[in-house]
Image (cartoon, rainbow, N blue to C red; front, side, top):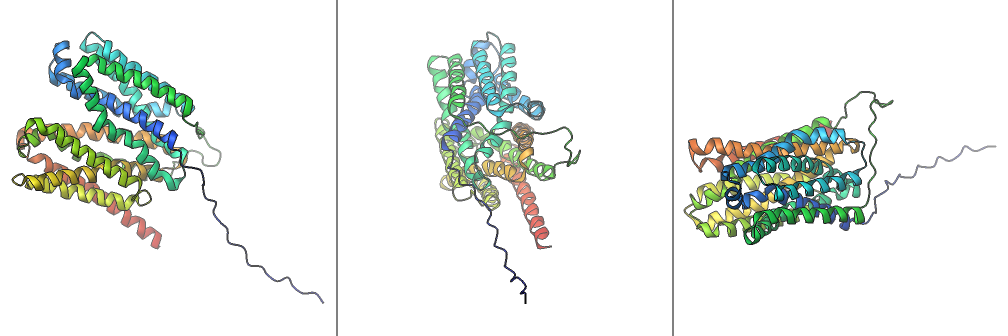
Length: 409
Protein backbone atom coordinates (compact mmCIF):
# COMPACT_ATOMS: atom_id res chain seq x y z
CA UNK A 1 0.00 0.00 0.00
CA UNK A 2 1.41 3.29 -1.04
CA UNK A 3 0.78 6.51 0.69
CA UNK A 4 0.49 9.79 -1.03
CA UNK A 5 3.18 12.26 -0.10
CA UNK A 6 2.24 14.72 2.56
CA UNK A 7 2.12 18.16 1.03
CA UNK A 8 4.64 20.46 2.58
CA UNK A 9 3.76 24.11 2.90
CA UNK A 10 6.18 26.22 0.97
CA UNK A 11 8.57 28.22 3.04
CA UNK A 12 8.06 31.93 3.04
CA UNK A 13 10.47 33.65 0.75
CA UNK A 14 12.63 36.17 2.49
CA UNK A 15 13.54 39.22 0.51
CA UNK A 16 17.26 39.80 0.80
CA UNK A 17 18.18 43.05 2.44
CA UNK A 18 21.03 45.30 1.43
CA UNK A 19 23.48 45.29 4.34
CA UNK A 20 26.14 47.49 2.80
CA UNK A 21 27.66 49.96 5.27
CA UNK A 22 26.58 53.53 4.73
CA UNK A 23 29.18 55.11 2.39
CA UNK A 24 29.97 58.21 4.41
CA UNK A 25 33.29 58.98 2.71
CA UNK A 26 31.94 58.76 -0.83
CA UNK A 27 28.89 60.87 -0.04
CA UNK A 28 30.94 63.50 1.77
CA UNK A 29 33.21 63.78 -1.30
CA UNK A 30 30.14 64.28 -3.49
CA UNK A 31 28.85 66.83 -0.98
CA UNK A 32 32.16 68.68 -1.21
CA UNK A 33 31.72 68.84 -4.97
CA UNK A 34 28.20 70.24 -4.51
CA UNK A 35 29.56 72.83 -2.06
CA UNK A 36 32.17 74.04 -4.54
CA UNK A 37 29.82 73.94 -7.52
CA UNK A 38 27.14 76.06 -5.83
CA UNK A 39 29.77 78.45 -4.46
CA UNK A 40 31.08 78.85 -8.00
CA UNK A 41 27.60 79.60 -9.33
CA UNK A 42 26.61 82.39 -6.95
CA UNK A 43 29.91 83.98 -5.87
CA UNK A 44 29.46 86.98 -8.24
CA UNK A 45 26.45 88.12 -6.18
CA UNK A 46 28.71 88.94 -3.22
CA UNK A 47 31.39 90.67 -5.32
CA UNK A 48 29.26 92.88 -7.57
CA UNK A 49 30.76 96.28 -6.61
CA UNK A 50 34.36 95.09 -6.96
CA UNK A 51 33.78 93.28 -10.26
CA UNK A 52 31.73 96.06 -11.84
CA UNK A 53 34.26 98.70 -10.82
CA UNK A 54 37.27 96.91 -12.29
CA UNK A 55 35.53 95.63 -15.44
CA UNK A 56 33.74 98.91 -16.17
CA UNK A 57 30.22 97.45 -16.31
CA UNK A 58 27.11 97.93 -14.20
CA UNK A 59 26.24 95.79 -11.18
CA UNK A 60 23.21 94.54 -13.10
CA UNK A 61 25.57 93.16 -15.76
CA UNK A 62 27.55 91.38 -13.07
CA UNK A 63 24.27 89.90 -11.85
CA UNK A 64 23.69 88.60 -15.36
CA UNK A 65 26.76 86.39 -14.93
CA UNK A 66 24.65 84.27 -12.57
CA UNK A 67 21.81 84.27 -15.10
CA UNK A 68 24.10 83.18 -17.96
CA UNK A 69 25.37 80.36 -15.76
CA UNK A 70 21.88 79.18 -14.75
CA UNK A 71 20.42 79.54 -18.26
CA UNK A 72 23.25 77.42 -19.67
CA UNK A 73 22.38 74.75 -17.13
CA UNK A 74 18.71 74.84 -18.14
CA UNK A 75 19.28 74.35 -21.87
CA UNK A 76 22.21 71.91 -21.79
CA UNK A 77 21.73 69.52 -18.83
CA UNK A 78 19.47 67.01 -20.59
CA UNK A 79 21.32 66.98 -23.96
CA UNK A 80 24.73 66.59 -22.31
CA UNK A 81 23.43 63.81 -20.07
CA UNK A 82 22.07 61.94 -23.11
CA UNK A 83 25.31 62.50 -25.03
CA UNK A 84 27.47 61.12 -22.18
CA UNK A 85 25.16 58.31 -21.08
CA UNK A 86 27.67 55.59 -22.05
CA UNK A 87 30.70 57.24 -20.45
CA UNK A 88 31.83 55.66 -17.13
CA UNK A 89 30.58 57.80 -14.28
CA UNK A 90 33.68 58.26 -12.14
CA UNK A 91 36.06 59.46 -14.90
CA UNK A 92 33.31 61.73 -16.22
CA UNK A 93 32.77 63.22 -12.76
CA UNK A 94 36.50 63.92 -12.44
CA UNK A 95 36.53 65.57 -15.86
CA UNK A 96 33.51 67.74 -15.05
CA UNK A 97 35.15 69.02 -11.84
CA UNK A 98 38.34 69.80 -13.73
CA UNK A 99 36.44 71.75 -16.41
CA UNK A 100 34.50 73.65 -13.73
CA UNK A 101 37.79 74.49 -12.03
CA UNK A 102 39.31 75.75 -15.29
CA UNK A 103 36.20 77.89 -15.90
CA UNK A 104 36.65 79.54 -12.50
CA UNK A 105 40.36 80.04 -13.15
CA UNK A 106 39.50 81.67 -16.49
CA UNK A 107 36.96 83.91 -14.71
CA UNK A 108 39.64 85.07 -12.30
CA UNK A 109 42.18 85.72 -15.08
CA UNK A 110 39.94 87.09 -17.85
CA UNK A 111 40.73 90.76 -18.59
CA UNK A 112 37.32 91.69 -20.06
CA UNK A 113 33.64 91.17 -19.32
CA UNK A 114 32.88 89.27 -22.58
CA UNK A 115 35.61 86.73 -21.82
CA UNK A 116 34.16 86.23 -18.35
CA UNK A 117 30.76 85.54 -19.96
CA UNK A 118 32.41 82.81 -22.06
CA UNK A 119 34.03 81.34 -18.93
CA UNK A 120 30.69 81.38 -17.10
CA UNK A 121 28.96 79.60 -19.97
CA UNK A 122 31.63 76.88 -19.92
CA UNK A 123 31.16 76.64 -16.14
CA UNK A 124 27.41 76.32 -16.63
CA UNK A 125 27.94 73.41 -19.04
CA UNK A 126 30.03 71.58 -16.45
CA UNK A 127 27.73 72.52 -13.57
CA UNK A 128 24.63 71.18 -15.31
CA UNK A 129 26.25 67.86 -16.16
CA UNK A 130 27.66 67.60 -12.63
CA UNK A 131 24.22 68.09 -11.07
CA UNK A 132 22.69 65.57 -13.48
CA UNK A 133 25.23 62.96 -12.35
CA UNK A 134 25.50 63.49 -8.61
CA UNK A 135 22.00 62.38 -7.46
CA UNK A 136 22.14 59.20 -9.56
CA UNK A 137 25.71 58.54 -8.40
CA UNK A 138 24.80 58.85 -4.73
CA UNK A 139 21.76 56.63 -5.32
CA UNK A 140 23.97 53.85 -6.67
CA UNK A 141 26.14 53.94 -3.56
CA UNK A 142 23.25 53.03 -1.24
CA UNK A 143 20.17 50.83 -1.04
CA UNK A 144 16.76 52.25 -1.94
CA UNK A 145 15.89 52.42 1.79
CA UNK A 146 18.88 54.72 2.38
CA UNK A 147 18.13 57.14 -0.46
CA UNK A 148 16.70 59.90 1.74
CA UNK A 149 19.70 59.86 4.05
CA UNK A 150 22.16 59.75 1.15
CA UNK A 151 20.53 62.67 -0.67
CA UNK A 152 20.53 64.72 2.55
CA UNK A 153 24.26 64.17 3.05
CA UNK A 154 25.01 65.00 -0.58
CA UNK A 155 22.85 68.13 -0.71
CA UNK A 156 24.26 69.37 2.61
CA UNK A 157 27.07 70.80 0.50
CA UNK A 158 24.59 73.09 -1.25
CA UNK A 159 23.25 74.40 2.04
CA UNK A 160 26.76 74.96 3.39
CA UNK A 161 27.68 76.80 0.19
CA UNK A 162 24.98 79.38 0.88
CA UNK A 163 25.71 79.57 4.62
CA UNK A 164 29.54 79.46 4.49
CA UNK A 165 30.94 79.16 0.96
CA UNK A 166 29.62 82.38 -0.55
CA UNK A 167 30.36 84.50 2.57
CA UNK A 168 33.92 83.10 2.67
CA UNK A 169 34.48 83.80 -1.04
CA UNK A 170 33.05 87.29 -0.56
CA UNK A 171 35.33 87.95 2.41
CA UNK A 172 38.36 86.72 0.45
CA UNK A 173 37.39 88.91 -2.49
CA UNK A 174 37.05 91.94 -0.26
CA UNK A 175 40.40 91.24 1.41
CA UNK A 176 42.68 90.49 -1.56
CA UNK A 177 40.61 91.16 -4.68
CA UNK A 178 37.69 89.46 -6.39
CA UNK A 179 39.87 87.59 -8.87
CA UNK A 180 41.54 85.64 -6.08
CA UNK A 181 38.17 84.39 -4.88
CA UNK A 182 37.61 82.61 -8.22
CA UNK A 183 41.20 81.35 -8.28
CA UNK A 184 40.71 79.89 -4.80
CA UNK A 185 37.53 78.10 -5.94
CA UNK A 186 39.44 76.75 -8.95
CA UNK A 187 42.17 75.35 -6.70
CA UNK A 188 39.56 73.82 -4.39
CA UNK A 189 37.79 72.19 -7.36
CA UNK A 190 41.07 70.65 -8.54
CA UNK A 191 41.57 69.20 -5.06
CA UNK A 192 37.97 67.95 -5.17
CA UNK A 193 38.69 66.17 -8.46
CA UNK A 194 41.73 64.57 -6.85
CA UNK A 195 39.61 63.41 -3.88
CA UNK A 196 37.11 61.83 -6.30
CA UNK A 197 39.92 60.02 -8.10
CA UNK A 198 41.44 58.68 -4.88
CA UNK A 199 38.52 57.91 -2.60
CA UNK A 200 35.13 57.92 -4.37
CA UNK A 201 33.98 54.36 -5.14
CA UNK A 202 33.23 53.65 -8.78
CA UNK A 203 29.64 52.70 -9.61
CA UNK A 204 28.19 50.41 -12.23
CA UNK A 205 26.89 52.21 -15.30
CA UNK A 206 23.66 50.67 -16.55
CA UNK A 207 23.76 49.95 -20.25
CA UNK A 208 21.09 51.62 -22.33
CA UNK A 209 20.62 49.88 -25.65
CA UNK A 210 19.18 51.59 -28.69
CA UNK A 211 16.64 48.81 -29.19
CA UNK A 212 16.33 46.37 -26.34
CA UNK A 213 15.11 42.97 -27.54
CA UNK A 214 12.62 42.62 -24.72
CA UNK A 215 11.10 46.07 -24.66
CA UNK A 216 11.75 47.43 -28.14
CA UNK A 217 11.06 51.11 -28.31
CA UNK A 218 8.64 51.09 -25.41
CA UNK A 219 8.91 54.12 -23.16
CA UNK A 220 10.19 53.76 -19.64
CA UNK A 221 7.08 53.60 -17.39
CA UNK A 222 8.58 56.00 -14.85
CA UNK A 223 8.89 58.92 -17.28
CA UNK A 224 5.47 60.43 -16.49
CA UNK A 225 5.84 60.25 -12.67
CA UNK A 226 9.30 61.85 -12.94
CA UNK A 227 7.90 64.63 -15.14
CA UNK A 228 5.20 65.32 -12.52
CA UNK A 229 7.88 65.59 -9.82
CA UNK A 230 9.88 67.98 -12.01
CA UNK A 231 6.83 70.15 -12.72
CA UNK A 232 6.25 70.35 -8.97
CA UNK A 233 9.91 71.32 -8.48
CA UNK A 234 9.68 74.11 -11.06
CA UNK A 235 6.47 75.55 -9.57
CA UNK A 236 7.77 75.49 -6.00
CA UNK A 237 11.16 76.98 -6.97
CA UNK A 238 9.52 79.78 -8.96
CA UNK A 239 7.43 80.65 -5.91
CA UNK A 240 10.39 80.59 -3.54
CA UNK A 241 12.80 82.59 -5.69
CA UNK A 242 10.18 85.14 -6.74
CA UNK A 243 10.44 86.21 -3.10
CA UNK A 244 13.89 85.12 -1.93
CA UNK A 245 15.73 86.83 -4.82
CA UNK A 246 14.50 90.13 -3.40
CA UNK A 247 14.66 89.21 0.28
CA UNK A 248 17.27 91.86 1.14
CA UNK A 249 15.12 94.84 0.02
CA UNK A 250 12.10 93.18 1.66
CA UNK A 251 13.95 92.92 4.97
CA UNK A 252 15.12 96.52 4.78
CA UNK A 253 11.77 97.84 3.54
CA UNK A 254 8.58 96.25 4.95
CA UNK A 255 10.36 94.54 7.88
CA UNK A 256 12.57 97.55 8.77
CA UNK A 257 15.70 95.47 9.37
CA UNK A 258 18.81 97.69 9.57
CA UNK A 259 21.06 97.24 6.52
CA UNK A 260 24.03 96.08 8.59
CA UNK A 261 21.94 93.25 10.09
CA UNK A 262 20.64 91.80 6.80
CA UNK A 263 23.58 89.40 6.49
CA UNK A 264 22.98 88.22 10.07
CA UNK A 265 19.29 87.57 9.39
CA UNK A 266 20.12 85.66 6.20
CA UNK A 267 22.71 83.63 8.09
CA UNK A 268 19.99 82.65 10.59
CA UNK A 269 17.69 81.74 7.69
CA UNK A 270 20.43 79.56 6.19
CA UNK A 271 21.12 77.93 9.54
CA UNK A 272 17.44 77.07 9.90
CA UNK A 273 17.59 75.52 6.42
CA UNK A 274 20.53 73.40 7.55
CA UNK A 275 18.41 72.10 10.45
CA UNK A 276 15.66 71.26 7.95
CA UNK A 277 18.22 69.29 5.95
CA UNK A 278 19.14 67.32 9.06
CA UNK A 279 15.46 66.51 9.62
CA UNK A 280 15.27 65.27 6.03
CA UNK A 281 18.09 62.81 6.57
CA UNK A 282 16.79 61.55 9.92
CA UNK A 283 13.12 61.94 10.73
CA UNK A 284 11.82 61.97 7.14
CA UNK A 285 14.45 59.81 5.41
CA UNK A 286 11.86 57.03 4.88
CA UNK A 287 8.78 59.26 4.99
CA UNK A 288 9.41 61.48 1.99
CA UNK A 289 5.76 62.13 1.17
CA UNK A 290 4.92 63.09 4.75
CA UNK A 291 8.00 65.30 4.93
CA UNK A 292 7.07 67.04 1.67
CA UNK A 293 3.50 67.71 2.81
CA UNK A 294 4.75 69.16 6.09
CA UNK A 295 7.56 71.14 4.41
CA UNK A 296 5.32 72.74 1.78
CA UNK A 297 2.46 73.43 4.19
CA UNK A 298 4.70 75.04 6.82
CA UNK A 299 6.53 77.04 4.13
CA UNK A 300 3.26 78.51 2.88
CA UNK A 301 2.06 79.25 6.43
CA UNK A 302 5.38 80.81 7.48
CA UNK A 303 5.62 83.08 4.43
CA UNK A 304 1.98 84.13 4.90
CA UNK A 305 2.77 85.00 8.52
CA UNK A 306 5.84 86.92 7.41
CA UNK A 307 3.70 88.95 5.01
CA UNK A 308 1.26 90.11 7.71
CA UNK A 309 3.58 90.46 10.73
CA UNK A 310 5.78 93.39 9.68
CA UNK A 311 4.61 95.43 12.68
CA UNK A 312 5.60 92.68 15.15
CA UNK A 313 9.35 91.93 14.87
CA UNK A 314 9.21 88.80 17.04
CA UNK A 315 6.53 87.25 14.83
CA UNK A 316 8.26 88.19 11.59
CA UNK A 317 11.60 86.80 12.78
CA UNK A 318 9.89 83.59 13.93
CA UNK A 319 8.18 83.31 10.56
CA UNK A 320 11.51 83.77 8.75
CA UNK A 321 13.12 81.00 10.79
CA UNK A 322 10.16 78.66 10.17
CA UNK A 323 10.35 79.44 6.46
CA UNK A 324 14.06 78.55 6.37
CA UNK A 325 13.51 75.39 8.41
CA UNK A 326 10.57 74.13 6.34
CA UNK A 327 11.95 75.04 2.94
CA UNK A 328 15.29 73.49 3.85
CA UNK A 329 13.45 70.16 3.77
CA UNK A 330 11.77 70.62 0.40
CA UNK A 331 14.56 70.38 -2.25
CA UNK A 332 16.26 67.27 -0.79
CA UNK A 333 12.89 65.54 -0.29
CA UNK A 334 11.84 66.35 -3.86
CA UNK A 335 15.21 65.04 -5.07
CA UNK A 336 14.73 61.88 -3.02
CA UNK A 337 11.22 61.44 -4.37
CA UNK A 338 12.52 61.77 -7.92
CA UNK A 339 15.18 59.11 -7.33
CA UNK A 340 12.65 56.78 -5.70
CA UNK A 341 10.29 57.26 -8.62
CA UNK A 342 12.74 56.81 -11.51
CA UNK A 343 13.79 53.36 -12.64
CA UNK A 344 17.49 52.52 -12.33
CA UNK A 345 18.10 52.89 -16.06
CA UNK A 346 16.31 56.27 -16.15
CA UNK A 347 17.97 57.90 -13.14
CA UNK A 348 20.64 59.86 -15.02
CA UNK A 349 18.11 61.33 -17.44
CA UNK A 350 15.65 61.95 -14.61
CA UNK A 351 18.38 63.80 -12.71
CA UNK A 352 18.97 65.96 -15.80
CA UNK A 353 15.23 66.75 -15.94
CA UNK A 354 15.31 67.64 -12.24
CA UNK A 355 18.35 69.89 -12.67
CA UNK A 356 16.67 71.65 -15.59
CA UNK A 357 13.44 72.14 -13.64
CA UNK A 358 15.30 73.37 -10.55
CA UNK A 359 17.37 75.96 -12.42
CA UNK A 360 14.39 77.00 -14.54
CA UNK A 361 12.57 77.61 -11.26
CA UNK A 362 15.40 79.80 -9.95
CA UNK A 363 15.58 81.85 -13.16
CA UNK A 364 11.80 81.93 -13.53
CA UNK A 365 11.31 83.01 -9.95
CA UNK A 366 13.68 85.95 -10.33
CA UNK A 367 11.86 86.91 -13.55
CA UNK A 368 8.40 86.68 -11.93
CA UNK A 369 9.62 88.81 -9.03
CA UNK A 370 11.03 91.37 -11.47
CA UNK A 371 7.63 91.58 -13.16
CA UNK A 372 5.67 91.94 -9.93
CA UNK A 373 7.97 94.35 -8.13
CA UNK A 374 7.45 97.54 -10.18
CA UNK A 375 3.71 96.98 -10.57
CA UNK A 376 2.64 95.81 -7.13
CA UNK A 377 5.60 96.46 -4.82
CA UNK A 378 7.56 94.23 -2.46
CA UNK A 379 4.42 93.17 -0.62
CA UNK A 380 3.28 91.13 -3.66
CA UNK A 381 6.31 88.83 -3.56
CA UNK A 382 5.39 86.72 -0.48
CA UNK A 383 1.87 86.38 -1.90
CA UNK A 384 3.33 84.86 -5.09
CA UNK A 385 5.42 82.54 -2.94
CA UNK A 386 2.40 81.32 -0.97
CA UNK A 387 0.22 80.80 -4.06
CA UNK A 388 2.81 78.77 -5.96
CA UNK A 389 3.86 76.77 -2.90
CA UNK A 390 0.24 75.80 -2.32
CA UNK A 391 -0.04 74.86 -6.01
CA UNK A 392 2.88 72.46 -5.52
CA UNK A 393 1.23 71.07 -2.40
CA UNK A 394 -2.02 70.45 -4.31
CA UNK A 395 -0.13 68.51 -7.00
CA UNK A 396 1.59 66.42 -4.34
CA UNK A 397 -1.64 65.63 -2.48
CA UNK A 398 -3.38 64.73 -5.76
CA UNK A 399 -0.60 62.28 -6.66
CA UNK A 400 -0.73 60.71 -3.18
CA UNK A 401 -4.53 60.36 -3.33
CA UNK A 402 -4.41 58.76 -6.79
CA UNK A 403 -1.73 56.35 -5.63
CA UNK A 404 -3.86 55.24 -2.70
CA UNK A 405 -6.91 54.73 -4.95
CA UNK A 406 -4.90 52.54 -7.31
CA UNK A 407 -3.58 50.42 -4.44
CA UNK A 408 -7.11 49.98 -3.09
CA UNK A 409 -8.36 48.52 -6.40
